Image 1 (cartoon, rainbow, N blue to C red):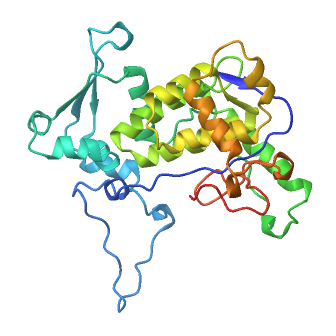
Image 2: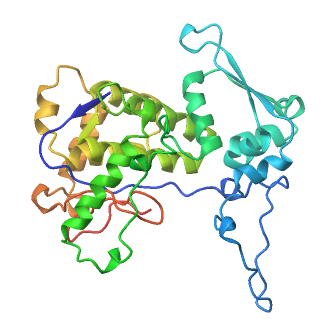
Image 3: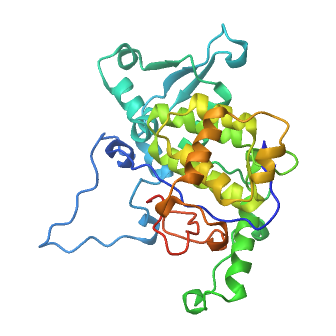
Length: 328
């Protein structure tokens, strides 16, 4: 669930986790091998328009060489909140995205010999979100007819948008249109009232952190920031208990949530909400607000937020005259 705020929304910086080497390899059947780089004496090979995604092979191509799926057993029948569920998942996808699965399935452990991994502490419904990202690279879900309805597609930028002055209304209009298009595909990331399910994203981040899937963790950070910006909302008190009981201390997700509360107008919310906030969250927020230097918050010197296109996804606004709190 989410808590809606009043007043102008403000973008916040995002810390991204550097991806480990194993998660940056292509989905080739030869684990750990990447396409060779052209030598200085040899000109680079020409690429067709269909091969302009250098980070991973297209999934449709990778399926040609996939081996037999491996068995992932999630949950524990002794716990009614996470009854045991079995999944058959392509090994190449798991080991390319997760160093945890690569070590388990490619090694001489029992999991590698049996080609089966048990995750008794995880929730099947959260693991299914991991599988969606694993096979699609995204957490959003296209609604019925979304692929045939151009109204649901993100808008195309003006061909000379880089020449339009920064203060021109076009940029604000484009940002709103892009956010509306994304909102139509958020699916189960929002409840029936349209509020973000922050608890779901926090739970999924905890799983991603344990599986060492840095690309998914970064995607969750971007998605959570976008949902907060587009709905002008922040996580609820119950969400802070998940954040501080299930997420490691040095997690960028904790930093992001603190930024959301510090940069948005949340004073009345913190004071009047009927539920209790996690005490460690409140302490961390006080420390952040009292810290001098670049991390000091000056509410009246914040730039207007809003998503804009960037090479690595959603790019937030920063404090005027200060260094970014986080580096991408």
